[in-house]
Structure formats: C-alpha cells, structure tokens
Length: 274
Image 1 (cartoon, one colour):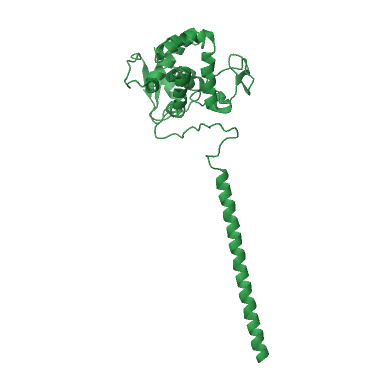
Image 2 (cartoon, rainbow, N blue to C red):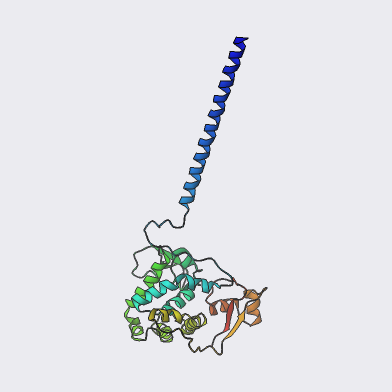
C-alpha cells in the first residue's frame, strides 16, 4: 500500500512539471510571433527616408469631387511657390505648365520618369527615359523625385538666353509669361498661351503668385467670356460628350490638358476656348 501511494505521488509531481513546461513554451512562441509582427510594421512605415535622403512627394488620394487637376495643384503648389521665390518664375505658370505637359501627373514621362515638363536630354548626363514625341523614342530626362523636375524646369528657363525677356516682366504677369514662352519657342502650339491662361484663371493659380508676393488675394478679370464648358454628370463619357459637341475625343483631351478618358462627376470640361 505504501509503495502504491508513493508511486501515485511521483506521478502527480511529474504531471505538474510537464504542465508547467508546456505553458512556458506557449508563452515563448507567442512572444516571438509578436516581435516578428512589429518588425514588419516598422519596415512599411511611410516615414522611412529614401536611400539618398531626398524628400519624396506623395500624391494625395482623391477626396470628394476633386478633379485630377485640383489634386495635382494640391500636391505641387508649395514646390511651385518655393521655386518662384528662388528663380522668379510665377508659380502660376509653373503649375499650369506642369498640368498641361504632364497630363496632371498622369502621363508616362511623369509616372515613370518624374519628368513633368517634357524636358529632353540635350546636355543631360543623368538617367534617361525614351518616349515617342515629335520623333519615335526620343530621349527625355529622368529624375528620382518629382521636385527635381520642377527645379530643373526653373534652371532650364533661367539658363537660356532666349527666355531672358520673360524676367523683365512683372513677376505676377502670368499673361505676359504665357505669351512670352510661346514667342521664345518653348511650344509650337499656337494656342499654348491661351491654354496656360485658361488653366490659371479656371483654378485661380494666380493666388499662388499673390501668396509669395504677399499681395491681397483678389479675383482678376478673366478673358474667357466666350468659353463654353460642360459639367460632367452621371453617365457621361468622353466619347458621348465629344459627339454632343461635334468634337473628336482627341480634341476634347487637348482642350482640357488630359491624356486619358477618365472623368469625375462634377468635373468641368472646356468645350470651346476662344
């Protein structure tokens, strides 16, 4: 009987020790799993700096009824103002050119090369991207960050003598700048000045110039009395709108600085811009 009781006590002690050991292993496994999860979260934080230390410009997600143009302006407005302070180029002109040249940041050169102004490789020793333009697979400059494209655009204008007359204009004379760019050979499109002015006045981009200069924010008289516009409603497509106004889809895209057929309800499209 004594032998049986002693054996029973040994068995009870052994089972107790085994049970404690099992709990210890479970805690260790849970701790390891938690540590691994925290490391993954840290690796994906957006605050991690880029490899060269330069700030990365992140395009904000669409909110409400903001158009792609308005999203672009919200993203790059401060960069355009800083460049105006440094290089004396109207922020309104920089933003309007960026919208027009890059399709509001949606064009291939902007998406794959961070090139927002279509500047080609002439004298360029950095990275390159090839794209069909006036000729097949022309060479364009490629940047690591979009803000480098804005800086290079400013350097491009300030370093070439043919644009020197522009800097004799009042810094907030966006109309003079728009016409001067065309006259200096920046663009071959005869309606290039009107397109820039139309964007500046439709989105009130002149206010960025006034913010830099510290002048009173006041509406300016526009010269778009003969402009015909269309407000996008549910069911509209680029094709249906073009047919309604006897335009081609390509003409409609050019009038609005677009490179695709994406529309948003409430978006204002230019139909005629005299």
